[in-house]
Image (cartoon, rainbow, N blue to C red; front, top):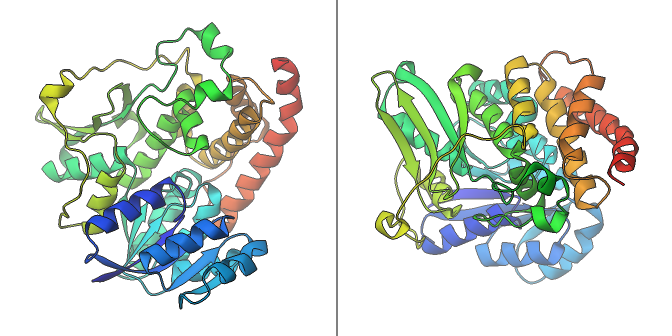
Length: 389
């Protein structure tokens, strides 16, 4: 039995981790769990998983968490340092699923010789990818990708040597507006954008899927995870979300990762790697499915993808700025303060306002750039709010 810690245990990834562990209770002993502000949900998760330590990022929730865990024997803490303690506790694997740049410092704190990090946090690679991967290598930590697309690529890469890879392709569902006109998309409200056709996810990533910014962020992630240059990375729209990623080799062969859209599949792969573990996930039935379709993304209707691709080619701190500005813009859209296309416009304006710079070389540098981009994007909001009204 191996020891596992779960950062972001009360989110959608955390819930999927619970499902996988329920299918294989002999696989892991849970050492620590960390959550955000919901003390009751974190306590319930800690009890259900038999965790030894629970950490809430919100310091104000410490008393409520302690009370909810009374009699369980589970130690607890609250505040950023408690989350860092959860990350550092002795474990064989840490699942990194804290949303946003808040997950960067705890994930890096989890690095240790021989440890594995199952990475479900995009911002670690988008905001500080070069530093993040170099630091993991320096400390002897193995990074295993949880995102369904990157996990599919990770598995497909086993089909041939890295030098034989010609191209890596990530697929996108196209989101809820795949067949909508630009005018229809421009009038979209948050409730429309949150209706993802295939996946059940948090609000922020669901909006990113609707703009296709999510696919742009994933291309940036792939560049760092797999050390592949920008020109050998592409995205295609695949509305069924069954083929998650493809690797094309120099001999003309293509290896692909297929599964029904269920995050338990890549999570199970990471938790058991390099073995396999049985799960109760639904099985793919190609005959029942009938067909798989693919199409080129329309970057005129979804300019966020084009913007992210330009950042992918530029390098430096641009990806950190892109990510932070996007978080501010998405939050403003969800609050009804800007229109749908205002998201991309604010991100682009923020990139124009900040004069680039080298890639972050530490957690501190990444967070400093992140905060600058957030302040800049927030200052631009009134202009785009007025434009949307």
